[in-house]
Image 1: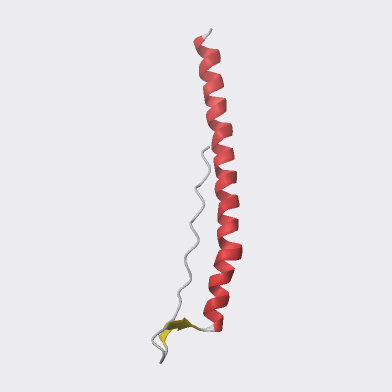
Image 2: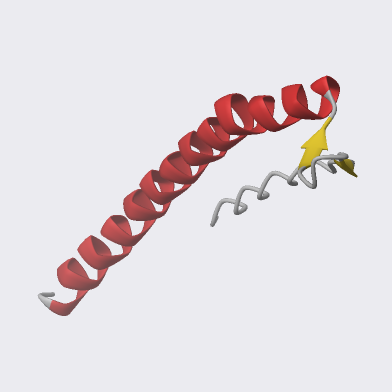
Length: 73
């Protein structure tokens, strides 16, 4: 069976605020959410995608081996 493709982690909703100096800023909580996304969510997603690719490779390799053995029979 083909494994399910991992879900892309949702980018955190950030609340931007225009400061008096004309620059935009986010709250400390939003900054923490953004850092968590970068430091935890994205690496976990990468790990899940690599595992997914590995599982697919096992399946396709097995299929090709079976095709090769049945064509030589």
